[in-house]
Image (cartoon, rainbow, N blue to C red; front, top):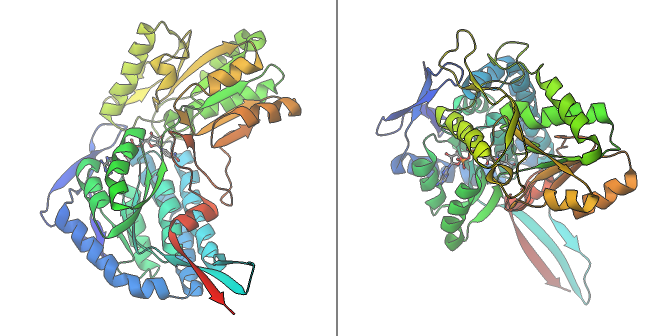
Length: 478
Ligand code: NAD
């Protein structure tokens, strides 16, 4: 069993009250690690160390900031296998997938290291005898609060731009997946990140997360997590005028038109529904298929699922790993019961299974449900597990109506070979990201974020650099 420590002022330390919480290996239900149950005093120490580090870090040259962040990227790459293994055991994702996420975590640091060199203020030519220029400066101490579904990827997606813009960071990994954040703290230390610039505090969301949100010296919060947590954080942060970046849930439609490239649409729809056990904010969890190919699509989709090996995440052939926690596992199974009560028909899967040697793990075979009303809870609520609903549509208008029918608006996919139809549909879908004939792809240079209740869409690329900075507008009369 591993003991995880907080990372404050460049040191690994216990919580002051020396209390620990157990974290479980989702594949076998055993205790994988214990992590500090941090409270006020621990956060105060972290804030003090960030405050002390801020004057030097905020003034360090962009060149030196680049060098340190780039070194972190290289060290993450060098340790890809160790980090991937820890991520896979801690989170339950297949090891091959974890390797890709660790590589992307390095890329996050690399991208924002170079962004530090290129980011600058703006100026405008204005009328009259005035000159204008606008300075960008770091905010000060900022918080990065992260979920468990892509632990290191999302942590680095936040920390890297916060550091690149000269802020000092208090980061909180999820209490369900603290392993790789702990390993990252060691990497940052060895890469020469000055003490106190990054502080990683562990604990539950209700206590530690809430204390971070309420701390008056933390002026901005970048949060990724559930819609309801985002709502709660907003109510606390708004009266304190904190800057808030919210990346919340999704219930993403995957629209299949009859004129699509059928084989490609099938393969990508399976990936979209079940990659990372369906525990992705961008999972294509609602498949909407044109009626003329509905039966054929359903049959082929289910055929493909027979190759989706569910089991031990570290084995090479595993496609679907373990569900993050017992409570989430039970929650997903409850949705399968609810689907039946709502009149849904389970066409395939949805069974809890116990792979050999992992009898106490939390595994569910990928489930396909049809016959659900678009207003049903299973079609409206984010389940965040290996469950996909499938429904037919007759007209383009109906497909768009169904796609837009939830409170979420994170992402969507449209499958058609008709370019005019693709443009027409894309323009009417209320989602922050619309993929045409693909899924999941994002480039670091593009903004990322949702519409409606999926968040406020100010993440990624220059958007997140802007989020982590203040802009001072200067006018000079000449
Ligand atoms: P969660 O909201 O339960 O927890 C997220 C983080 O917030 C954790 O670190 C948790 O400890 C902390 N937290 C919980 N309550 C808090 C509180 N009251 N105050 C402060 N912090 C608190 O979410 P989760 O279950 O870890 O993550 C899954 C959710 O994240 C899904 O809804 C998923 O769609 C979403 N997500 C969104 C994106 C995106 O880019 N939009 C990306 C990944 C995940």
